[in-house]
Image (cartoon, rainbow, N blue to C red; front, side, top):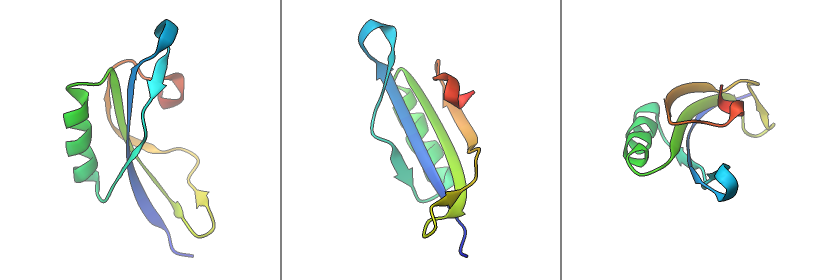
Amino acid sequence: MTRETTYVVQAFNAGESGKLKRESPIVCKSESGALRTAGRLALSKFAVVAFSSTGDPEMGDYDDEPTIFFRKGDLPEDFD
């Protein structure tokens, strides 16, 4: 079982009736790359979160809770 860490940046814009609209997630090679990407997106997006998740991609078995290391804006409840 090989465990890998995946780094993801998720940005949001304001959608209809005040709900957040998720944009396509961006997968990064490292935490520092995700931080740079999140910082850039935070300048123009309603909300941004960067997180990592560790698991076995072949088995699809990932940790239950991602590790959030960047957040900006009013994020959905699932990022609290």
